[in-house]
Amino acid sequence: MREVLQAEYVSKFQCIASKCEDTCCCGWRVAIDEESYKKYQDLLHSGGGDMFNRTITREGIMPVEGNFAEVVMLPENTCPFLSEKKLCSIQEKYGESYISVTCSIFPRIYNVVNGKLELALDMACPHAARLALCDSVPMGFLTQNINVHSRIEKVPSVNLSDMNYPNGVYPYFEEVRTFIISLLQNRNYCFEDRLVILGRFCNDLNQLSGNSKIEVLQLINDYSHLINTKGFYKFISSIPRQPAALLKVITLLLEYQLKTGAAGNRFAECLEQFKKGLNYTNDISEEDVNISYTKVKNSYYTPYMKQHEYILENYFVNEVFKGLFPFGTQTSIFKKNIFPIEKTVLTEYMLLTTQFAIIRNLLVGIAGYYKEQFGINQVLELIQTFAKNIGHDIPYQQRLLQFFHENNMLNIPCAVMLIKN
Image 1 (cartoon, rainbow, N blue to C red):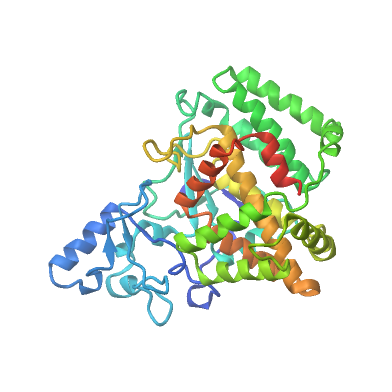
Image 2 (cartoon, helix red, strand yellow):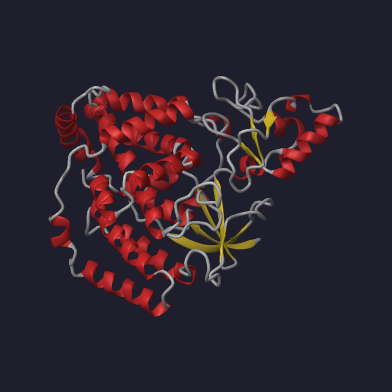
């Protein structure tokens, strides 16, 4: 038993295995840790592990923590170890101790914050997404003693005493994250406006990096006062609406991901529904896409999502909690010698904002595809497949930030434009 801080929905989760509408063995890159890789090599060299012949590679892998090797996926982008029963043949033959750490733990996301273990679930799992997103009550967190997974010794961590990463802000992590979650759950504002306020806070926090805890706490107090007294209403009301802003750019970036990433069929189908719902083609004019987007959004998306905004709220609260936002983990997509852009609170916010823009824009198009039938099933499928295909595609996230950097878009005005369209 170990004390764990976890989202309340986690205790309800139990893998439904072959009954799941999706499989975690298809549609993405499957990471293999060093310990598991050596086990597979030992079996192969002993003559008893033929299934590992040419199915595991160390070539062309993503250079991130825990990714020592990768599974060589089949042409249909399915794991070669997936049995006809939709179960893992490695586990069936050799036992659970032989499956990789990634496969063994998923969809659980563990972090260690100042020595305390935290647990959330990855929304790439359909069953986890249903449990986490469908509850209209704001997501809660609790500390309790549970039996934790036996292979969690290598998980992302935050050391609050580390004054050098990033820029000395980690000592204020708990206070900052608590404030951000309370902001994202403040239903006196629509969710778009909460994200806009969060952007201003992150920008101001970014400028305070390296300063005293008193200054950070004062910033939190100032923002709390402005939020409670509706001090941001004038600023928010002055933001012009920009229908379908950057929609064509986002669509091209998504199509690029489908061509270069390990996208699954479910996500590809969602993208096709989005395009059909907006009558979108690559040569459509900006004027026509704006007209189509606005009409579909007002007719089908907004009527449903205005009553179910808690779905997006729950998703992003979960992202903030499991991703250690706004600082990120000490090993992240910003790993040295891989990505040249400096890791900051602002870049973490831009990634969060881009997630929102992509999800919302895709949902608008999908709402146009399903019209009056648009509802919870379509929203959950899109968010789950997005989390699986985009949330786990580290190189793609790197390319997104690179694109924003090269086009001078790593700033709050750009973020606001993505949010308020």
